[in-house]
Amino acid sequence: MPTHLITGAGSGIGAAVARRLLERGDDLVLLARDAGRAKELAALHPGARTLVGDLGNPDRLSWAFGHQPMPEHLDSLLHIAGVVELGTVGDLTPKAWHHQLNANLVSPAELTRLMLPQLRVAQGHVVFVNSGAGLAAHAQWGAYAASKHGLKALADSLRHEEHGNGVRVTSVYPGRTASPMQAKVHQQEGKEYDASRWIDPESVATTILLALDLPRDAEINDLTVRPGR
Image 1 (tube, rainbow, N blue to C red):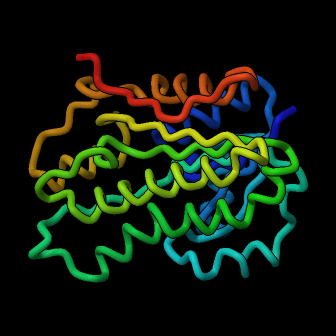
Image 2: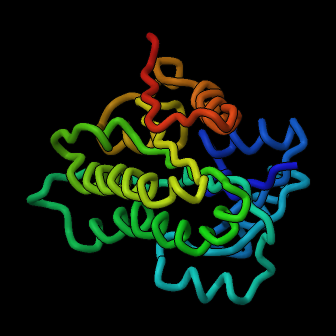
């Protein structure tokens, strides 16, 4: 069975993807920020293994992985975790910028670097769940959009670099998706949150599995998903 390493499996899109892959019998390794979160993920997704590493501190990921059993085989790396903090460029502090850039861009780059040897052997797949903000930036979204624009550049560069090694790279750009993150965004925007207005995480999970399951003669580079209502 294929083995997948997933970030952000605790809720929203990540949880939906993890459920779908477990249901069909795939092997999962779920990244958790600490031991407590690892226990929660193991309870949420019975049968999945966990790996502890804090995406908020990319400089420590290599050290953390050096003290844990690592997957010997890896077919896909799914970057689904993300953080958001809205604010104008005039108000956002360096702490807010670092928080979002570390979790949304630097850690995915470092995690990819650390897992590339296994992915090359398996001719695996790296999926970056980006955002509509990775394609267009708007007021209050500067730091988050910058991190996601950077994530697009990371994915595009990686695709060119690893094509000869047989590693596929896909970026998925969901619009607003019903999730705890979206509820937080609405709170920051001062708006009432109505989950029924937005994309179901299961729908985004379907697009991710489509990219993963595509026959080897083809590759989905970029996939944009928008609310249908």
